[in-house]
Image 1 (cartoon, chains in turn red, blue):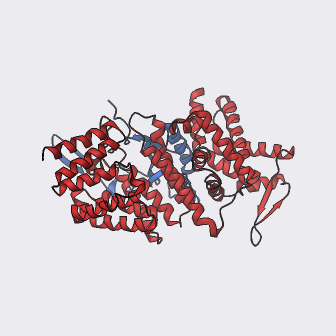
Image 2 (cartoon, chains in turn red, yellow):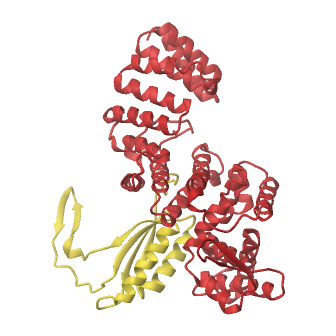
Length: 422
Length: 116
């Protein structure tokens, strides 16, 4: 094995193992920042030793042992205070020095719960959403600061500083390394899911030609989603989010055309949708529904996405069901954007007049001011009703609000078509 | 990147309950670490068949097939960020499954260019 092969091997092990390593260490040292440093020290030790000594048979165990030794030495030198976390009745923490065999035992425990704790800490509400995203990618995704910076089109020092501050905040606020109690679980879980979905959408919005690391955010979010499913198999919304991402990701290849232009859902080549991801998405959705989570916000969005996935061609789309699902989504997570989508679904199910009535009700929505899709949808419905003059005005207005040249050109072309009466 | 991994074990005789349990635990771990998309065992060729088309003519060879005694034959589809990660998974899998041979084939993904 050459040196660079070894480095690649170490990187591969790190990607899969770093989160568990940090999670196990964090339980002992009660500080994710310190845990990350210890894990990183073990990585540096591997980079020093493996190129000459060879990759060990069990690299994950090697890293764990090395980090453990490091932690033990630091503990012995009094640089760290380990605490054994014990639950007696309620939640009681007993702080005392830990003996070596206890430390071994604690580190050899099942790591599942530790990983879950790490997830909840990284997505803790004391941190800003930006910080949660960065910390999650760093601690759970094993991404480097540079990779995170490139993915979010931000300078590396900005991300580095964000991470340092986040870890300091967690320490200052003495955020416990624990899974939230039952009464806060729902709110804390929704923060976790939001972080993962943010990561996914950041990747999904990446344009062709963007740094590949941006597109990789989708993969990373999918992986995190699958990890969460493994950690919380009884939580329906976890399955809902995973299903939603799998279904969206099944269309990654078809959502842009050869020159990077956006291809709308109904215009996509469905034969190129990824059947494996669709199958996984549908299975995840079924699981969410079986767990009683059909009306969760992610499960509902997954169900809408599933309607498209099930339709072998656009004409076969069950718009009545989609309109109903949007109505339900509007009840669970009200937003004018959801209403606009509902209006479009209603127009597909019941005709343009029914859709127009709903869109008209949205024209005074503050939140949609300057949102080009509102006049564009309204123009489309007016055109379908033969009210071409009004349609043209809407398309022109939409064009003036469009975010890029390609969209603008498309909307102006539609306006011109209305003007010529075609 | 997505890889299809196949494995033919060299062991003769049915796998021990310990090995079955260890393999189950390994699959579970891989699923939980988010890399495993699909996995399963593969039945002997005799329950399926060999098919081919030559000169526009489709034929099925119904056997007999050379007797294979491998009792663990399986596949997995994994989603990883590098070939090295796939190799790492294969190494770990074989440490559990035992001696054997396998193939690791990269599947053409949504953002991959087909080879020219």
